[in-house]
Image (tube, rainbow, N blue to C red; front, side, top):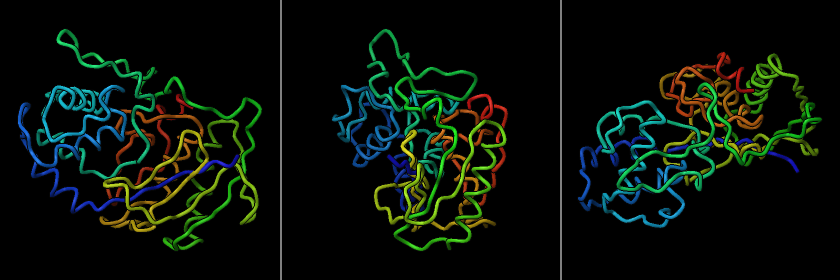
Amino acid sequence: QSRKLQFEGHHQEKTSKFLQSLKEVQKGQNVVGLSEVKKHLRKFGYYPSGDINNLTDDFDESLEYALKTYQKFYQLEVTGNLDSTTIKKMMIPRCGVPDITNRTSLSKPTNSSHKSKMFHMVSHYAFPPDMLRWTSSKYELTYTFHSKVQNPNEQDMRYASSRAFQKWANVFQFKFEEAPTGSRADIIIGFYGFDHGENENDNSSIPDGRLHCNGEQYWSTNPNMRQIDLETVAVHEIGHLLGLAHSNDPNAVTYAYINQGTIKRELTQDDIDGI
């Protein structure tokens, strides 16, 4: 079965205003919009399995716990509040893949402990315990392109993807070869219209082989401050396809967040150690 990398998009101005309106809301309050924060944190794996349907506008213990887990992962001050630093982080464009892919591995909060049983971590890179991997004999992978929208142009997409695949091939025994358009391939890359990602540029199943880019986002191979760098995101998402989850090292290619205009195309030692 072919696998795809996905890149989702967002309406950043709308998201920024929405989150700013919730700044400094306190535990115990009921404020319209908190349910959207809960949905956001649930999407990225920060809710215990028993609480994923408790999406009210109440600032309850579960929301506090989810915020603390998020803050701990991104090495922020662990306050459990929607403080300015946490809101600023949430407003940055990011990958749509969850940070915690096995939601049942999170402990529900208790009065005695707020510790979370997150996925196993080695250095900063991570491997969720239920992560699928390519078979041990599958090191020669083919990829092809299939898009429903035209953004950016096909030449830019092919150029950025080829360079991104080579970055990973240089540090591991994987070999990547482009297959003819329309043919069967291990990995499918494409641009699609998205309306379900509030602040995500990209999303790849781990390792489902699908690389979907949001066709409504501004992409470039030489980005300005309002554009997302194609190659940077491709290198990141290929890491997911090869079995890596998000790193909490902000310098790593596999870090979830990427600012517009940022170019981060080279693998760090943390990325290399992970693969």
